[in-house]
Image: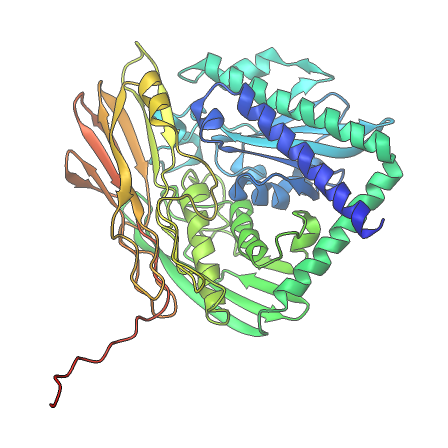
Length: 522
């Protein structure tokens, strides 16, 4: 396969993922999937190695890439099946992220898998939005081990009902599952067309060539990192259960043929829900090194073959069941990015930016009574860290998430909530030769009693600056003007407000000190 054919092959695989995403978005019922785009789509080979992905959510895609081979080995696959799962300790991330896997058979032989993962705002937790301030996995909703939602092309309605019946709006949830099924069916159709056109043998050879090409590009990019050992430590604010200043520590052992990423020294798993399954930590590591590669590097298994992980079992980043993990996927993953970037900044200061806002600023809310049941979940952007080439962007999602905000019109027409204000948090970015981006201010007024949960970070330890730049401002949460902890569940009354002021990004570079002016003749 020559260079032109390989480029076409890679683009067509990516197009399959893009079309799956378009189908999923257009068919979904919930704002979380349809408006915020909290979903991801990918193609894997028969062994569970990543072949292609759309530019969706890094934490979804990296964790799937890390864990898919184990999932494939657990299941007896048949044509027409689709397997559903969300178990964080069996390849998932946290319970709201539900994965649907469809095998593709060609001439009776298992050839590939089509996969999508979508965030369900309700997965059966007692608190609305299924993002509670939890202490164990069973408090976070329904755990779905790998099981066949579709067998031989037929939907198992009883199984689907078991998953959705505990939700506040089972009809909406079933609609989102139908959208995920449709997305996979679209992918099966498109990928089958490609394989029929190229032939199965040529398709498999194309995958080998694609991985080899990606590995060459990746290794060449990573050679820019000088050989040596580089360490960095950062702190999580708290776990929501009274434990604070929780360290995440990394050591990069860089050699020409591989990079070992060692998290020895990281805190043990904690009572609160900032614990992370290993697949999420891997996703954050893969993301950082992917950012150092050329844009045309294929997003496939070959890209990550030069990266090794050591994460002690039972630590915060490789927690053991039944640890609570709801915030590990959204908050801890982002801090893993920060510590790996912090280590790399020691040797690549011109390429590595300052810390970004460092939190997905999770807000979950919903009805108190069952008369008009509703629930809603969103993440809120903040300031991007500055780099040598420019200041940080204002009010954006960064690093492990890639979602949009929900339009105010959608929130206010569907839920008893009004968005009082939404704008930039001026001046919250860190000072430097290049300034960090500003965070956001988003204020909600409630029209009915509502349960609210906040899972946020960087409220105590602000995003750090780089090369002498100043840190960004820490975030602030408040209820009717009274400060709130970073992680809290509360019930608010009609007329109450909750305001989230998200952190700014860190600044880059020391601002030169100008000499004092002197008077003529002095």
